[in-house]
Amino acid sequence: MMQFTDSHCHLDDIAFSEQLPALLAQCQQLAINRIIVPSIAPDNFTQVLNLAKRCLDNLSNITNTNPIKIYPCLGIHPWFLQALNDSHLQTLSELVIKSRNEIIAVGEIGIDGAIAKQAVNHGQTPEDNLHHQQHFFDFQLNLAKQQNLPVIIHHRQSHDKIMPFLKRYQLERKGIIHGFSGSYQQAMGYIDLGFKLGVGSTITYSRAKKTINTLKRLPLESLVLETDAPSMPLSREVTGEEVLTNNERREQEKLETLVSSPTNSPVNLIKIFEVLSTIRPESSEEIANQLEHNINQIFFT
Image (cartoon, rainbow, N blue to C red; front, side, top):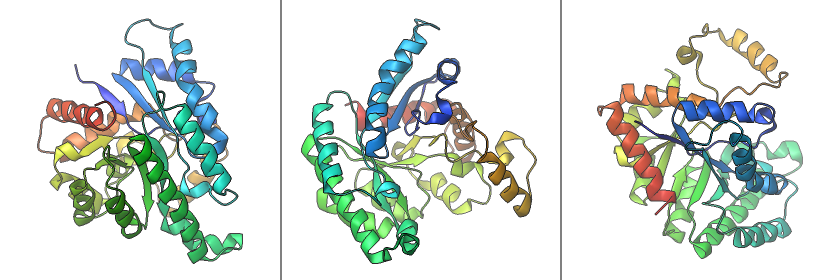
C-alpha cells in the first residue's frame, strides 16, 4: 500500500484547532502517515513542539493502529522579522539545542524578495529589509550546520539571494526548497547542491506551465510532496468547483478570509500526488515509493 508524508504543513494553525482529531483520522484513512510542521516565529515555537504529543493524545481516542507521526521543526520565517532582533535568534538557538532530539529540521527559514520590496510600507528601505532577512537566514543556516540538521527554505523572488548562502554553508543534511516554482536551471542548481524540491498545489493550476514543465523534466529523486496547509489552496480545476473570472475570484478570496475554515488541508496531499502522477512518466506506485524514500533520505537517515 502506498504511504505519504506531508513535508510542509502548518498543523498548529488555529484553523485546524477544533477539527484536529477528525482531520488526523481522515489523514490516516488516506495513508498520510507523517506530517512535518515547521514553525514561523518565536510566538509559535512552543505550540509546534507540543503539537506532536497533543496529536498522539487525540488519536489515542480514535485508533491504536499506525498512528500519524507529527514532526516539529524550529525556525523563523522571513515574513515575521519586522519586530525581531538578535535576542530572538538567541532564543531560537537555545531552544533548538534543547529540543535537538525532538525536532527534525531548522525551518521555516528563507529570503523573500517581494516582502523586501514592500518594506517602505513599514518605514524601512528594501535594502535594509533584505539585509535583515539575510542576517536571520545566515544565522539559521549556521545553526543548522552546527546542529547537523536539514533546513526547510522559503523563497520568493530570491533564488539569486539564497543560492550563495547554500553554496557557502554546504550543509551536510541539506533540506527542502519549499513550494518550488522556479525554472529548470534554478531547480537543477538546488538539486546539484543536494536539496529536494517541495511539490505543492501550484501544479494543480494549469496556468503554472513553467513549474509543471520543470517538474516533468527533473529527476524523481529530487521531489517531495507538501500542502503548506492552511495556505496555498488547490485550484478549482482540481477540486471540481466552478472556475471563476478574475473579479469573481477576488471576491471569493475576500470572503474566504472572513470564515474560520481553512482554505487548504493536509488531506489535499492526495490530490497533489494524483496531479503529479499525471505529469510524470513513472507509475503511481513508483512515484509514491520514491517520494517516501526522498523524505527518509533528508530527515530520517
